[in-house]
Length: 337
Image (cartoon, rainbow, N blue to C red; front, side, top):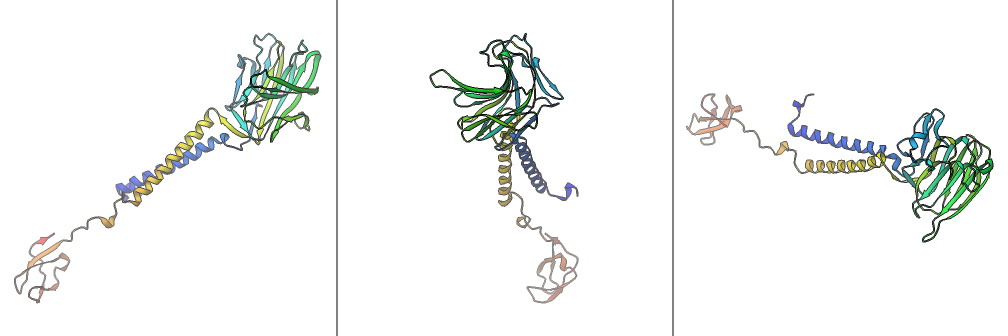
């Protein structure tokens, strides 16, 4: 049916209703697109054949020169002649609050032993940092230390207000090159775990008080410690479960903000439409002025008085209101509106 079947007001109302529905759908899509910013989401990033997604950022001086996406994973190779000693990291653009479980799968392809016994080691760690106090964080990692010691390690940095940071940590021997590293917080307790291969059982290497402060971010860190050393690591995946994201940079946050704004706009448009319809913005056909009925005037054949009747009575007899005689309504004489 064409638009000619509807009045201009009806077409205008239909356009407003369509716009309202469109805004509601758009708001829903934007909120869905921002889903990663909602509490309770699980993250799984698989780097095998896929570069890191926008929720993660690559960090470290000239980091892009030392990384490559491969079918087997995201490869980070730091050569011995690299000028900078800063780690190259994959870091989330969001933090976490509450309980969480974070797991990454990594493979040490090559790690050159550091010369100094005081070096933290060469390899890869899974690191989380608190929002408060700033700079306080903890690692679980797979490192090579002096004299060729292959280790699974954990360490913890405590930030002391007005004082020097304090460190704690421990390690155990490990010759596995392909491992999974895991950090789990339950309440205020943090558990440090590792597992051999893709399906080996997890083993706890430490458990300690960590507090319930929000996390600033999560980082997979490839490091050579305090010495220029060769390290070649492949990161296969990163999984974050049971956490509640606290902030997100980029599209998800924008999508959430715009989605809420559009949703509010859609609700406001719906309320306005309802008000206008209820309060007579649409012309009511019952309130429109009636179309005048054509009238027929003629003199009474008995008394001569002028009579006015509906044109529908032409050719019919009526009773003259003046002389009470029955007279025929003629076809001649004038018609009046």
